[in-house]
Image (cartoon, rainbow, N blue to C red; front, side, top):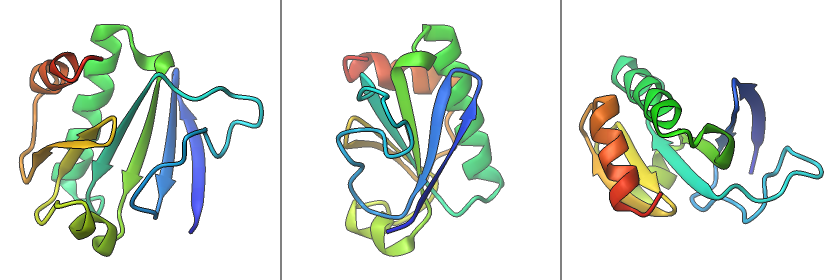
Length: 117
């Protein structure tokens, strides 16, 4: 397993190569667990970067940026293991909610709200 973390605005963005995110933030030292975990599945292609931008925009609009940890899952075996055969994919709190579609910020917001975020 390898991971790296970088802050972007109020987000903790973690590149993770395991299929299941840990219960606590791996890079935060004393940070508490985020209230919501989003996973973006993809190789870093244009569509995957567009989905990540839509996720950030939706979190900003919903005011959830500081309560969310975002994991980028780039390992193909992990993606397939979670049922994401086509990138980009999005999971909210461990449940895959989108596969193979480039979503708008409004669509991401709707998925987060319907998942209880």
